[in-house]
Amino acid sequence: MAKRTSHYVCQSCGASYPKWAGRCESCGEWSTLVEEALPEGPPGGLEAGGTRLGGKRLGRGVEFVPLKGQDSQAPRRASGIAEFDRVLGGGLVRGSAVLIGGDPGIGKSTLLLQAAAALARSGAAGCAYVSGEEAIEQVRLRAERLGLAEAPVELAAATSVRDLKAALDRPEAPAVVVVDSIQTMYVDTLDSAPGTVGQVRASAQELIRVAKRRGFALLLVGHVTKEGAIAGPKVLEHMVDTVLTFEGERGHQFRILRAVKNRFGPTDEIGVFEMTDGGLMQVTNPSELFLAERQGEVSGACVLAGIEGTRPLLVEIQALVSPSPLGTPRRAVVGWDGNRLAMVLAVLEARSGISFAGKDVYLNVAGGLRVAEPAADLSVAAALLSALSDRPAPSETVVFGEIGLSGEVRAVGQTDVRLKEAAKLGFTRALCPPARGRKTRPPEGIAVSEISTLGDLVELFLDAAPHARLREA
Image 1 (cartoon, rainbow, N blue to C red):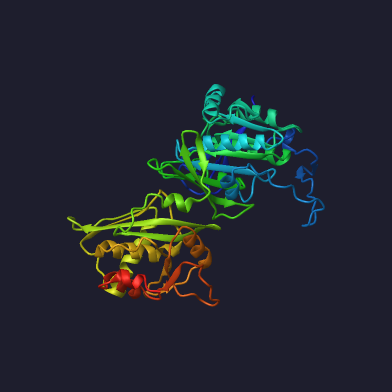
Image 2: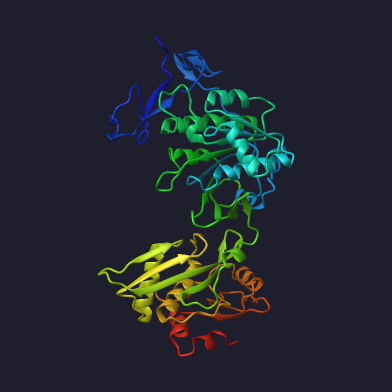
């Protein structure tokens, strides 16, 4: 009789069954049994080095070591792509596992092929690119188009995890291994098809275990579902050390690499790339690029001085207010939180008497960027008031600040960094909340107007001469 190599585990309670069933008998949940591989070990299920006492299996024991090690930590491997290294926290850590997800065609394979070529050229001890979706000739065609044909990168087309382990589990393993993608890998001890929950989990576990043992950096490409989440079990994101998402709109050439989880660096950093005919080009000054297509003084447009991670970023907030023919006006938002827009509209009506009833409201963050920080509240309110009154805000003014439910404008962090970035790009005025505690001196060439309540902002746009008041020293 053949030895059983897999079992079915309930993803809700952890109960194990030899056969699949639609309902877990332990917890009563439906469709939670997933096939998983049984742990490998010596005959009798005894781990190497283990012992038995009275029919019971005993562990080998765990060796504890001091928190402070004797050896210095190995340096990170910098790829030379500054935007990629910034999101990782300075480069790849030895033995780390990185998962990169994104929509189809967004540029995940292009980014990792460029990163592997840059690492190989920088002197890393071998870089391997394993493709489970394309043949070797197809990868070579992309490398020629990107100008990377001469890079010393080792290519392979494989989908069997057992074959990959045999090639990588050796002392002379490559320093960096890219697997494109984890949904195409399969473990032959499971009967399910590649891409299923059990296969993705088992394949990732085996590859990560080899990476930790041999000390190479593992980069995994992950597909996403129609909701935008990485396909496969949620435990996959817990197994890896870093989770990156590659974002961007199909109609824009900009791509945003964002860290969702990072055990070796910050999780609020972003890297900005531009998709060109020659591949992904890093953008060293994204503020200038996002503001390149501004059209002077136009109603409904306002510039936000925001912060993404440690980087100051200036983006244009666009608003459009129009009469609605519908009984329930539309509220459409692109690049911002729709709930915060509803809050800003409610505060404008309750605290300042500005009504948007019977009007459609459209809000957009230009350039395809998604803004999440509360400092965008004041710039959104300024764009809405400008669109409602049909009075443009001066093109040389930046706005930032958080709005409270009582109508007050709250201070935000890193004010001096925001103002320096605005001054560098030629802005001469800033509307911001009053400074709390230590006073910061604004950079030369930029004047600061403090907005303490939302009513002060309303007066600037509904006054007879808003531009004159904005330009007062």
